[in-house]
Length: 388
Image 1: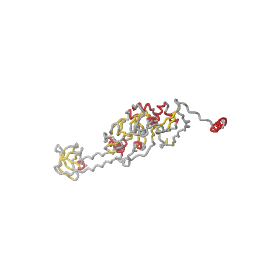
Image 2: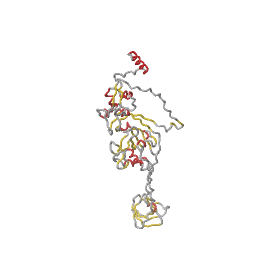
Image 3: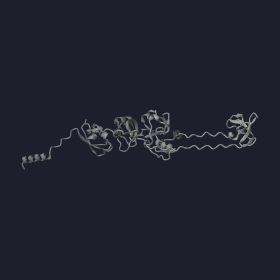
Image 4: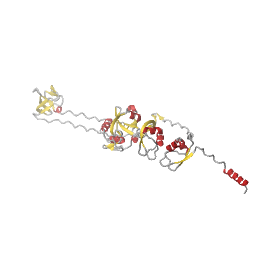
């Protein structure tokens, strides 16, 4: 075959194959993921933004890369290609009625707080920073890290974490079965004999004869010593300290009836029960006098009066009862805070005067704190009233 024929055939093949793919930029390269590497570390090594590296390889979750995976390294200075913004949809309007806004719509609070996070399997420093809306640099600085290597079980401080707290609508309340005071026994009329001595239990009227129509001889003060010298029906003849004698109705010599114990309000009963556990040691998951955590403490206190109350988490207790505005707190209300996790992750019982009692992991025991302490004031998310 002649050279001209070969050249013509080659041109025909190229024409049929279509235009050649443009060559990759000289600065673009590939990287094979090694065991233990993270996307953040690879991006730092090649000097490209993490977001650009993730976008170039279609990685939705930067924490999920595997050893042996081949990554395309974009050119230095590349910017991640962002998809077009989704159209904004107006939030649904709150439906109102004659009684006001619907109560079944929960509200949402967005806060920035410092919290502690326990590293789990598969966690990366970049993934944690992205989850809580902070920078890797801030995360490393707050924990004194010299590299991005972390391990499961490690406790990290997340400064200025962005947390979303969902405030649930009113939930079911519980009925407290408060102890009912026993009725006082009826007073017994004393049965006295001649010569017996008795003290007047209260100021009593001494009459000149054994009937109520007789005139008053004297009024004996309480604790006045009296000596019985005679008896007629329901009247006793008594000798006074000045040796004069008169008559006192037997019923007037009975001890005064005790003041009936008025039933204590639910708040006072709950607070009294809660204060008995001050100093009890903190135990994660505990719900007994031998050791308890914050939700176990609430369960132990309230289950004494509400047997149907289940052992729940603080997040679940936040769904019970009715919301209480800060200015309307009263003893016995539950107060909630966002601490180790976003949402109502810690709970205590309000005592009054801006104080609350709770099982504190930092104090390692049940203790009393103030709502005005900076730590709790910044993390307060709301209060619920369990009992109507």
